[in-house]
Length: 127
Image 1 (cartoon, helix red, strand yellow):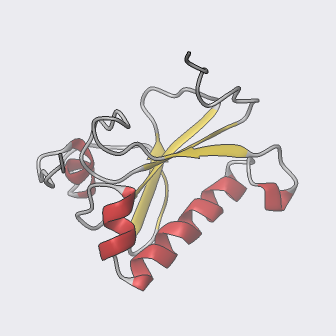
Image 2 (cartoon, rainbow, N blue to C red):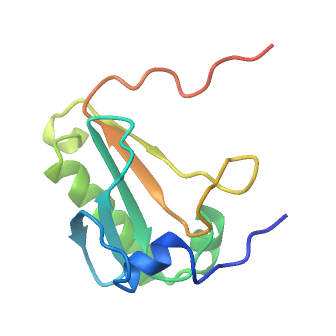
């Protein structure tokens, strides 16, 4: 089951300025802001400004400029928020949920950057 892009999703509305966000950084192709329900001391969302539903959609259909700008914004906020390894910090977790099995809630590609503490195992072992 593929998601269709929904122009009424919350991230599209944030990009249009209809809903405020706690912006951390922005460039021509991406926006980074604080998660409203943080799961770690540092919990940011990075979203492309284009209409992409998931990581695979973005990686397949975004321009090289969009992909580079998104990735560089991720590095910039990791450094500025004190979690980037390049600056000698403790690290972070980057998570992108996709589709029903990935429990994606918003049909707009977004990357969670979480850090500021040891994050623990990603998934509990089952069976």
